[in-house]
Image 1 (tube, rainbow, N blue to C red):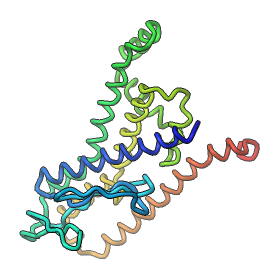
Image 2: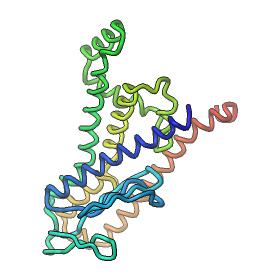
Image 3: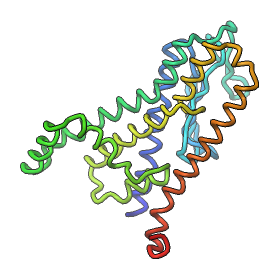
Image 4: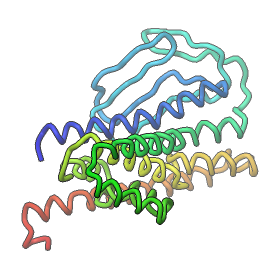
Length: 261
């Protein structure tokens, strides 16, 4: 393990988050909910790329990301005091179909990226020895669905959160191009599945919330919705702390195996 491998792991996590948020971004523009800002990571800003009608900002910690979406339909943006401000054309809420498309686009982008990366990794079979190539092809023929699940989960088996994700790459035995493709495919799949959990503010929670509020419109103005959001944020915070502990535990074991064994 080295500092260079740590940097590659962090850069890969930024890349996967960028794929996820660009899925939301492109879907939002496609359904007429144009976004003004894509943010990758949390904490202090590292740098910001400015386009004519949208900005891309990278923050220090690759923990999460988000896309700024207009609450109402908009047609254009003005730059005022170096910030993009939406010009509201009407006060109609976005259609439920459009909301679901935008919220689901992030996980879908990660899933498509995972399949593309894994396919690219298997194209490298030509670089393997004949016996290893034959063994892997035979395994796929026996159970392709089971093999696909295994390859998209195995590299992330020791990762609970961002620390574990980076550590999984640093601890890999061979930092080859094929292993990086395999690792990045698995990371895309993990991010997609995690974001589909029906807890706000994850994509699954946003989809579920949008559907419930359309079925029961009065719930949106009720105090119960605020209590529900607080409860979900508390649950997400607890899961985050658990993931952090699961990430740190293997590192503590390496430092003091007798104390944590």
